[in-house]
Image (cartoon, rainbow, N blue to C red; front, side):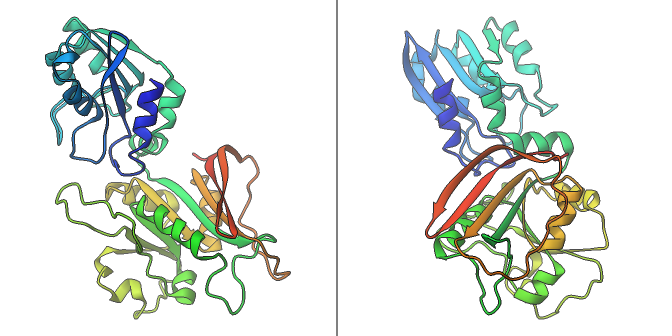
Length: 332
């Protein structure tokens, strides 16, 4: 199962809106097939592993990080492929929270004579797909807060466009490429005139319905509605991917984005938008970039973090800067 977990991680954020899944076929104590789900619409992990195992799958054990699907979607049900392959025993880690599949694989495969064991490394397997789980159960996007600041908490430095260096900014592009929408407040649009697109050598995921490459949605929240008509997000080639929410609450905004298929939402600023989401307890993950300098100038308080804590966090270098990234405990 640990091998299946590592396989699932290879997909990164490329599977959305589907979950990350890894699978391993074992026979006689040897691995005879392995696979992971790469993108929505492509073969599921179980199918990849069974194809690689070929005839050796008959009488073998199949380890999967997530309960196999049992309904027809963009691909046929994995339960049928498992049955036809002659798998002797199925071991899976996490239950699927999708009501179309939840609990069905166990019943279908037991009825077909397959031994089923579940819950192996359950927490680790569930941890692979916290965003998918939240998106499915709560009907809201998984919210990632990205901030760049100096060591003394300044979010902007007078006379400079960027706080962090090129390596940190490249990492931000990678994070953007793994999200379905990028959100900013009106002041960020007025002050910075950002493009909010994925740039550089990062793959933009295709529309799962048309396979056409597309940029993330650009989302602006505003109270007044006063936005510059000549802003890049309203005039560039991606202007049809810009959404403006005026005077709406966070729950309504997030539900509308969910209905548009937004699974992962990246919040890039400004301070008011960040503080509003923190107050609403809607931040699930954070990527905080720190430039190794002190400005001694004005700092911004981003709301009340009382009751919040890091669940999992890591610190990595990005050129001269540091990135603190992890999931948060305290969100709804």
